[in-house]
Length: 408
Image (tube, rainbow, N blue to C red):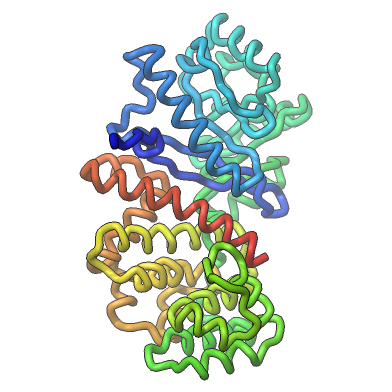
């Protein structure tokens, strides 16, 4: 039987969270590239437009089953002005008008037509030039690249935009100082790599709760730990025991029957699986970071595990642990090397995490490039590697969303 072509196989997708003023998740910007890097190439007119729409719609449909938040989607002027049908609920998306678009009467009319059927628009990378003035009454939000366009240089214009009712999104926020400046100036939403990283605690006393977490994580990573020891560690904390049983009884674990005790759970799942879930619950329940930080790290861990599975070269369990521990600094809010030195990880795992050694280290580096939207690095990869990365990342997104729902 001929295999049905899945448009997702030809799609490279990354996602970047957008937070509100309280550091809660507002939505995700979905960033797409084809494997031949020609996402914005419309030389084939309607055919290219149709393919992009198919990819977008299938991707959003699958993601939205797990995550009920708005998506921000980049669309070129060519796509906006085409006659293509866009079968996505307008309440689920914000359409971003890309920078460097020619603001013609045709583009303005197209935006009006889309608005008439309920779609909302975001003007991306706004630089306060007058050529975009005709679009301002039509957009709900404006994104300002605060790294390239420092907001303090445009205080009056920013205030005018806010007073007109436009919501401002600060993108490329890469420092705490810039985050505070943007909040003070009235920005409502924030996007940038800094928001996925912790305030590092280095050279300061680690609080007792964090220290207890480190000790438990360290014991769970000890290769000589016994089933009885894991059971005792878990049973010492009734809330922890409840959370673990709740996870193990959920569909994402695939246990054939409901379990009623930690020891019974170990019998059905095995020591490695119990250690993995105990680790996740320990870290998620003690971290003070936003849940979206944990979602990013879970996606990374599952993606790394899946890449190990598909390659057949490396241990899936090692790939997963490497993915989780690569984000230990973000979860615990402390220096990564300092945290890893306190955990009973093998020398090999530490080299994978800190120096990207070996195949698993290479996988981690690729995943981090995708998280940072480093398309230049990704574009140089062999096609088969891109396909594997894309599939595994998409699988990781869905698994992470399902896992967080169970852990909360």
